[in-house]
Length: 241
Image (cartoon, rainbow, N blue to C red; front, side, top):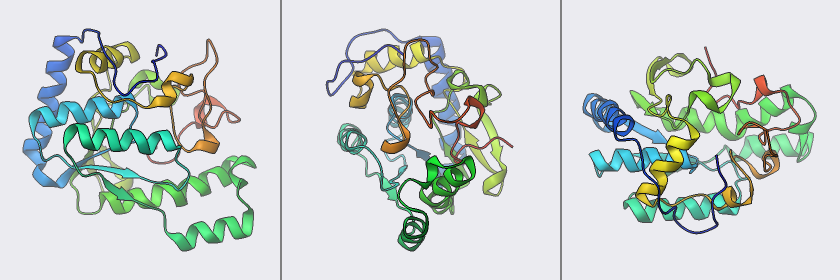
């Protein structure tokens, strides 16, 4: 994705009407089917802000939840505030269990996730996966901003699929067929809030210690857990079955 100026909104650009209308149709059907038992998961990436914009064009009372791992960059929280203000929504925040985080750090230190893939998954499990299970409790479906071309681990992504890790509830990935250019064009056309770290070379943003800017020629998720191989660049929130 081209770098973005460090301002509060993305200005200019033209979105694909056909792609946009198809996604709106998918989301309209999802909202009609699930009512208040569907929610969007947001990390406040460009993709997630685009999804929030599409959802609020259909219905003003959409539910959006987020997970604060305790290690989010300040820029993520600033973007969250901008999104809440822009769309007049209240973000439903979920946090890790305090006891589990304290035990992990007390026994393994603050950066055990760098030691092995197993320990990184343990940290993600405590800080992300367990809070997600609580966020999804009582829902019949959830919505993501995932795209197929983000990484090799997502090439088989479907727009709608059962989430077998969470009781078979439906998972909607409305941007599955969108490219980075499609997302940026839509965000520009709607002058959406955006995450300021994009202006510093970041293209996929998670916890601060596990995210860096990408280098020329790298794929957009190369900055996530950069010490691991590309097929491992998932945290468990979006594990493939």
